[in-house]
Length: 117
Image (cartoon, rainbow, N blue to C red; front, side):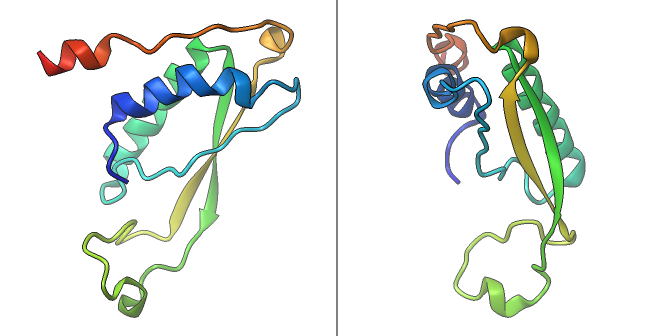
């Protein structure tokens, strides 16, 4: 993963409405946010949850057991994910019941422009 957190926010604002066009659609994404620090990972997950909530979405992070302790798995990989823990939190995103019938039009945030200056 090489994107900035703000890139993920822009992606969500632009792509989620068409991706979740069906009222009972489910969206997920690779959750590589702060993978080597459980505290910051939790903070990042809550930030994404808040951002998606502003789009009318409900987000939960489902704990999934992963086995990443074997060093052979990471052979040839520059940066390990989830070292020191055995849980991956899978995002599950759906429309909030009160937003299922609304059409949402989103534009990318200006946060990236503000951040770069």
